[in-house]
Amino acid sequence: MQIRPVVHSRIIVPARWKRISNELCTINVFTSGDILVPPARVLISKHMLTSWENILAMRTGAVHRLCMLNGRTLHEAYELENNQYYVAVGVERFQPLPYYQLFPSKGIIYNLTDA
Image (cartoon, rainbow, N blue to C red; front, side, top):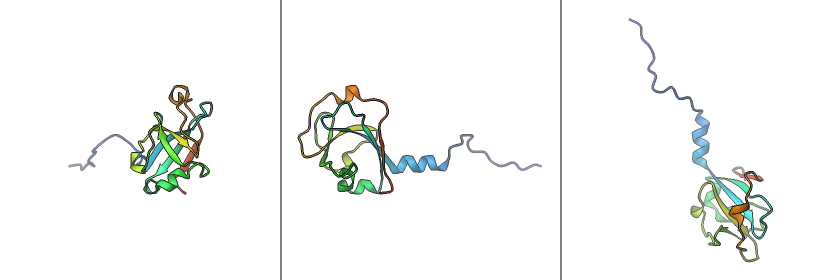
C-alpha cells in the first residue's frame, strides 16, 4: 500500500501576503487647496497607528489635521479607513474643493512603516 501526502488546498499564496495585508493601512492624502497635485499614497504600519502625532507628521510635519473630503476633521487614528481619501490641512482652514472628482490614479507614495 502506498502512502500519499494529504493535500488541503491547491491555492498557493505566499505567507508574506497575509502579513502585509494585516499590518498596513493605506490612505491617500490630498493637499488642502491644491486640486492639481495628485494625492500622496501613505502606507502606515500598525505600530504607527498608535500615535496620531506621528501620522500628522507624515509629510514634513506641516500637517496639523486630517479631514475627510467633506471637511469633517479626524481626531484619532482609529477613524482612518484603509484605501480612503483625506485632505491634509496645515494652519489654514479646510478648503472645500472637488478633490475627489479630479484625482489621478497615481501619486507619491510615502512609507511610514519604518519611521
